[in-house]
Image 1 (cartoon, rainbow, N blue to C red):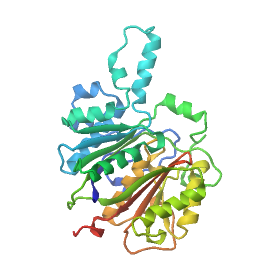
Image 2 (image 1 turned 90 degrees about the vertical axis):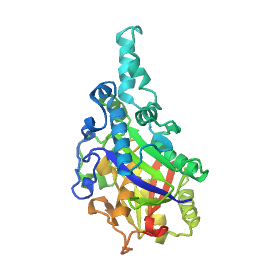
Image 3 (image 1 turned 45 degrees about the horizontal axis):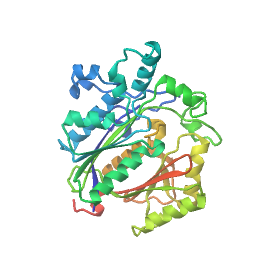
Image 4 (image 1 turned 30 degrees about the vertical axis):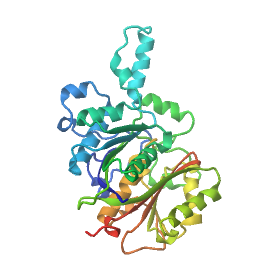
Amino acid sequence: MDTYIRAASQISMQHPLTEEWMDAPILPSAVFNEPLDPDYKQFISPAEARRMGRLLKRAVAASLDTLQKGNCTNPDAIITGTGLGCVENTEKFLNALIDNDEQCLPPTPFMQSTHNTISSQVALKLQCHGYNSTYSHRGTSFDSALLDAIMQFQLKRISTALIGGYDEMTPAYFKMLAKIGYWRSASADLASLKQAGMTGSLACGAAVSLLLTNTYSPECLCRIVDTNLFYTHNPEEQSSLIHSFLQQHNLSETDIDAVMCGFSGDDNNDSVYHHLLQSNFPDTTALWYKHLFGESFCASGYGVYCAAICLKHQQIPEHLIYQSGQNKPSSINNILVINHFHKKDFSLTLLAPCSSSTPL
């Protein structure tokens, strides 16, 4: 059964809820970055907004914008991936716990600190009573949500699904991760992020939303051929599993026009992608996206989002190209999105234009 991305939206370091990053990207250099928030009044009333944390507002706005673009009012399923949920509300509740000596605690931060409150809040806003699930699998949270949606389509339980990847970065949590070397010690430009042997990446929250459907319509961005998750420490086995994944769809590595990788500027993270490109895709163009959207547990959602936009427009902007390959096709037919977390949790998502299976 074919699955299509009908619409997509993002809130990030780039201009929110638009595709301006394709032509005029914002190139961040700061280590700690905040997403650029849109005007929430067109999605959320002021009374509602006062009771919502920043991540909830971003999730609701990105979700509603995606549904508007996809001409869908009530999806059959809402599936969310989040590494840590609403960190800001968790911090508020824990600080109140200490400050108030565990008495007279405000209930709102506690309720909004749970990981599944994001899907719940979107469902309440839409009055959607269908399938609702949240995945919190750290660096593969978004990928797990995407896999669940495709499985629900294959089981013929749903015909539309709203998929989201949401995480936030607070100053306190940023400092905590900085102690274990997650981030750069100083600002970094593009050349520095590509420099070998460097450690740390640029941090930013994530809010990316996709509307999936099992029926083609002219506004569809692309087709999801397949997605898969696997666990392995062995580099040779990683290469073999990618080869097997493509073989299942009668494809070889030379049929892939571009590989979207999660290069972040951290050599420990990027070395995995360098190995896979060298062993499986030595002549294929490699793309990246974290230099535009930052690193977070749900950053892989931006990889799928960027690949879908490129397939829709049949164009890959220069600022997405990490390294050019020798094979430069006249059209973009297949983009493979590869994500890994700590060199052991992997996800593969194969995207193709709608025209490859559906007459336009």
